[in-house]
Length: 523
Image (cartoon, rainbow, N blue to C red):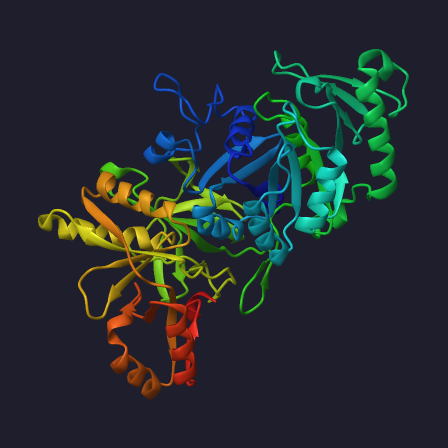
């Protein structure tokens, strides 16, 4: 069992939108021999779509809106790759996915440098001390100076860089990369899917003068001397501790530098790490099975109205049909048909090990952050949901479809990408999201998957805050402000505050009440 666990590499690819994340994911799958041809994000009607963007709206818009799990073998290891949404409006799904992985690959557009969404995502990685690898993408386009790029990463993201490769030229004059790993050069040829590689005797090997343009080679040598003097050489121990980040350069769309990155990433990335529970630290190699739910997806197969709870296996070995404890409720449940994934394609598995991500049928029992365990009552520590920033009321166009709308709103809110509020004094439900583009996705899915045609109208709400405090104080607040109160999906009282002044006034007038950004169960 321990040998199998040590083979696992569970990681997420994250980036700012349009940095090339879905493209590099497809290349990884191609190298893993699980697809014959890597799709392009903006495929036309007669072309294939990307494997990881499986939802219809993703295919129409050319963006990822939901995390997908991709499992495949590579060089003796079992890869569990979590492909996350790049768009900031779907960042909540990405934040949750980061709780289920052991390491992260961050993609940076070499022409733009560090972008806002990358900064947000990095905050989660820093908080969890997650090992991070950096890939500077799109070197075949005009890009920033490689030393300046790494300086940005260190200064803005707080990552200590250790260059593993360094480019020679960029844009139209991009000629290849030098690898400090094994003193080799990799020649860039946009017409070829395989990069030619030659071993050399250091950066001053005279053969380099024969192969590369003198101007760009001189720039490269100057940069190589600079980074070797100023930046720390790669140290595996520091990388695994989250204190040092290896940096690679390449072009995912041209498949250049991707194999080199993948080979070294798999060799260095951590096997399943210990996970923190409220009760104790849980080691991956412990014999008893434990896991936690980090995502719930409704309608991976719309024809069957299925709900799948995505479970990160944290320790031990899981066997199909095993009875486990659902720790939040104390119920014993049998996991009859666990699945592994290739995006929406499911395969029933008989066993899974720590580091694996499995899908289990959810009859409505599971919540995000639920722990399941073979013998022990545990609660794994996770990241709470974010307070919504945008709000809309939902109006049903066809009154005969109220049941479908109710079911759709309930299931989509349980996926965690949206908050559903039932106003105390109104039958019109309110949705709260982190990013406004989520409203388009919710409306699309309600109509496409639940046949509930609806209209969303912006609600005049400034913030949502959970109301917590002594029962008498809560009751007094409720009696005076019922027009701005709602219940969340678990029946907890929420104050939908209309403006900043009102929020300040309530905090002053009701000192015995806490207006919480997160519900306590999710902290």
